[in-house]
Length: 228
Image (cartoon, rainbow, N blue to C red):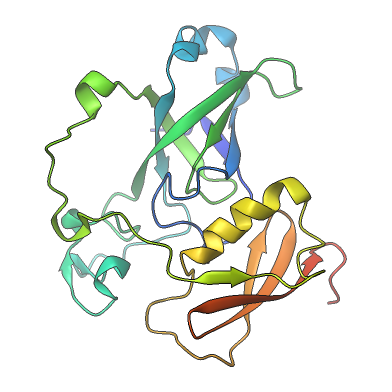
């Protein structure tokens, strides 16, 4: 297989990416096709669908070939289950699957045609191998059972952003950032209220602490202006 496109998203490192697609619907991303696939005929008819499937590569994950069990965050990171019962990035073939909302098809920009999607859970630059329409009559199963992941994840934290703490983040992206932070990006085994975490988002470095169920944003800086 070869990539047909890459995604341009505000998630610039693995830490903090929503653990499932659709958790942060306000997070917009752009699917940019490689030149050989950047042709309008390949998207003809797609405008009639509200959602699409993205099939992509966990390009920053590498399976060590030894274990077929993982510790999913939904189980607190303490219980091992089979990799094929999870969506873990550490798997023999590092393929990801995301259902995202198709916001629109950009036909005007220099990299057009490109897809504008909402709710993607992909790292910026992730290779995309295929795109398929989401078809409600076949893809939606109201009676489906979700095993240990049957319940939708809840927002774990209240986010406090004191005046000025998010000034570096573009105003139109702040709510998506707050939504992502509210699901608690930290590994399940970390709970040090004094620790300062860094989160790369939309060209900014956002620093925060977590204590007592509240995530407090300390500061934000444009990465091109942050001291080295």
